[in-house]
Structures are given as C-alpha cells and as structure tokens.
Length: 371
Image 1: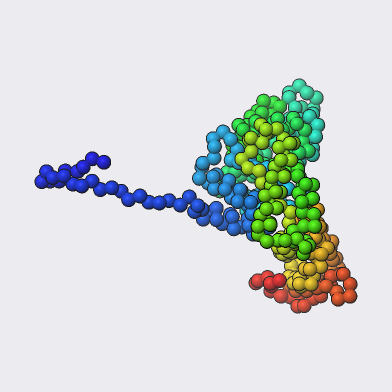
Image 2: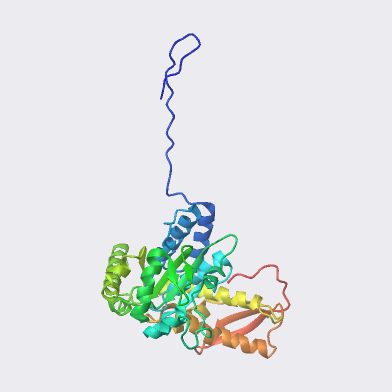
C-alpha cells in the first residue's frame, strides 16, 4: 500500500484493512430448510442426509465441477434401510413429487443386449424406431423446475446390471455425457447420479445378529455403537470394491453405508407412516375426509407385527397396510365412516387385533387432532 501525501506535504500513515473472519460452516437459509424437511422424512440415516444437503449447497453456489455430474453417490445397505426413500424424499421437497426423478431398475439390464433399452439401438437395426431410449435429454430435463434446474438419476440395485452398463456409467460419472444409439448426446452435468446396492447386506446382518435395539443383552453405549458403525462401513465398502472395478469406484464422490434400522428408528418410521395415511385420507378423491387417533397399545401392536431385522421399514409398512389401512378401507366402503368423523384405533384386550370405534361425528377440518 502506497503512503498518502497530506496538503502540507507530510506523509500519512497507511491504514490497513481489518480482516473479517469467515465461517464456512454456515449454511444458507434455503439449504437449512431443505435439511430440516429432509431430516423430518428420513429416520436413522443422518450420513445420507448430510451428503445430499452438501451436494445441494454446491449446486446453489454454482461450484460443481464443470463437465461432471453435480454428484455421484453410491448407497450401500440392507433392504428396507431407506436407500431409495432418501432419493424420493429429496425429489418431493425440491420438485414437488416423490416420483420426480429418473429411475432405472438395473435388474432390467442383466444381459448386454438389454443396454439397447437404455440408449436405443443404432439406425438400421430391426425395430430401431419402435424402441426409443429410456435415458434421453427430454427424460433428464422433464422434472426440472424454474427454481431448481437439477435432475436426480437413480440406478437402482446397480450390482444386478450387466458389465456393459457399468462401462457406460464410467463415461457418465466422469464426463457427464452419454451417446445414444442414433449418435445424439445426452448432457448429465446438471444431474446428481445415485446408485443403490444391497452389497454387504448379508455381512452387515451377521454383524448385527441379535441386533442393536432388538435385544437387551447387547451393549448400546455410544462407543460400542460407533465401533459397530465403523466396522459396518468398512465391511460394505470392501464388498463393493471386490464387485466393482477401481475405475468405477474412483469416479464416485462418496460411498454412503446405510445402517440397519433399530427399534427406536422403526418407532419414528411408524409415526411418519401414520401421518402419511392421514394425508392420504385428506387427499382422497372421495369426499369422506376424517381423522383418526392411534392409541399407544395399537402402535405397539403394529411395531411388533412390523419389526423384522432382515426387512427393515418395508416390513413395517406392510404391517400398517394389512392391519390398519385395509380395515379402514372396508369401513369407508361400507359407509361406517363419514365426513368429519374422528376414529379411535386401539388394541382389543383379549386378542391381537385392532379395534376401530367412532368417537365423534361431523367435525370441522380446522386442525388435525394430535396422536
């Protein structure tokens, strides 16, 4: 900094600017709102939530690496742990629908010739015009909104795909481009690429045999949980490294290992699913909107019926449909429930069966009663 000269010819002492310490841990209000809403929909998978939130922050800041997808994430973990649910919940928050993303079931690409369904067959092949490719630029762009010019692409159960699909993925993950059968280019630079796999699930289940949160004989202090969590992560990662090539693994931004949901996690999932049932009732095309109150004993019954270490949250959802939603549907169809009713769901004292009783009739819809 050059010294300044005063009117009398003297020298002024140069003034130094004061440094302002910045905090890179602060998140924008938009990202904080996204994180809050996503955490309210996802139970027990904080690691996955953090990774997606970080990707969203990078997108909003315009700091994604040019010529690559915004993020490449591999989700590993047992069935029912919420791998696909994380993508659905994120899409629902950002794009308004849990189905607002491109989903490719890799079980449909177990043979090399089936890759033609993904990229289309070259001109001249029989049926070329009758088999349009699945992963086109139109399919990529259709879910983008003015507020969020980004797309989620999910390759579900990637381990089931033929090696030819893995070779295609190398170009997508590295250069964010895909060449279709008719030589058109697909740009995936505004995409977050998710891949899910059950690799390592058997080994993880063996580690949790007798499980955390399922039996009282297992220590559940913080240090023990952290140790088991680290072992599960390294176990799943080693299985993935044995399955996929180093070139494939090297193109991933992050490998996220989903842990098996314990009893307390499933209790939170139950509350979320019951809230979803209430939302389905209120959004029904039939003009029979009503409220229900699920008592504590009924919730415990649903947890008992829906808790299975091997199947995670999916088994609980099936129990809710079987013991809760189906009986409610019968009551609606037979006219036993009317508009504005309040239904109490409890457990019969002498049998493992839910009871449904009408507490009040013709209530207004100003606010939903608490459970």
